[in-house]
Length: 84
Image (cartoon, rainbow, N blue to C red; front, side, top):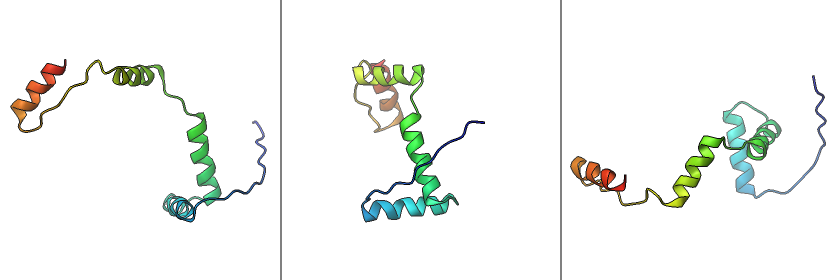
């Protein structure tokens, strides 16, 4: 098993952000340190898969952009068909 070396550090956070982090850590029954570390790990080391990247690129291309009419079901279905 790989040994993970952790270094102690300190940094400044806004009070409101620290409070939110503490609340979330408490709800998850985890220490603040563990919660912040795992949140940062998720943010730094998670990459979208190929399918997600393709969906993001498709959405950004505007290929299927249009207006959805939610007035009633028939209008909704008609507006969906017009986009496709």
